[in-house]
Length: 81
Image (cartoon, rainbow, N blue to C red; front, side, top):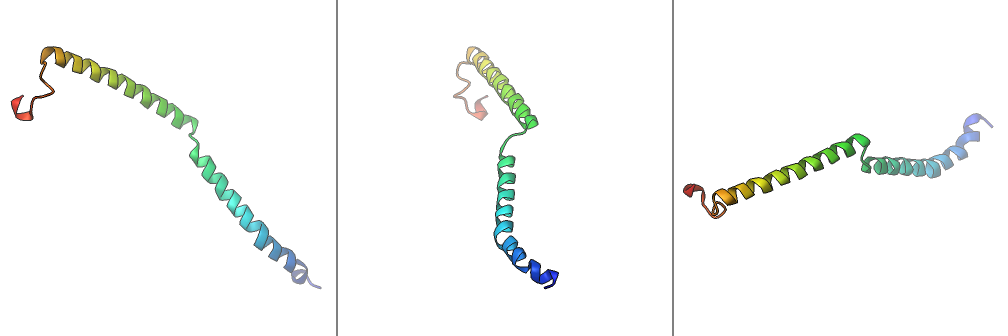
């Protein structure tokens, strides 16, 4: 019995059972790891949220100033300004 005949059945079992499970688990773990945010991404997201909060406050303040200065500014058309 030569080496090829000796390894034929274990190779078939390996290729039909182990390899598909291995590939499935490998890509599943890659998919799960790509869903999570990295620390850098989380920091960038927090910074963007802080910027959005500051911009929202600025817009509210500017609208309050415009409401006090020109009460009907929201109802005016482009040509009326």
